[in-house]
Image (cartoon, rainbow, N blue to C red; front, side, top):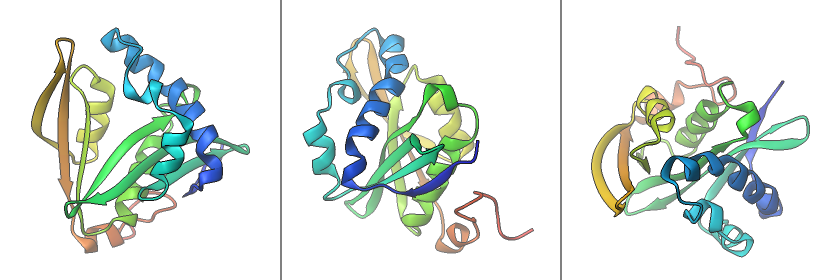
Length: 169
């Protein structure tokens, strides 16, 4: 399956939200809470985020199979809602989306969060060079782990955004 990474537009909001809900069902199961924000977010709210967030999408066979969003806030890039269709996970789509968002916000400090029991997410983020720096309780069942990554502009420039591989060998 050939997958292309591109900027999403507000016209993609409904498809991204549908995929978001599909992808976050497993997270809701981990925490025993189907009221988590990614499952309750409205289409209007997603559309509003396009005003100040860059959304990327991964497209395969004419449908969106992954997405990530980020915005500039307080001098850093805040990354949110990395999602990949559960049927397409394990194929490097999430890694490619993360690398592309890093290229688009080159030279910034990157910050994101995930739940403390989301081991698959934590493993991916650590593999990509993110390190935990804070933890905040949300409920008795959920603590958010905040991770950050700082890369130089030259390091971002050395990553090919299409393949996600280093340009220098």
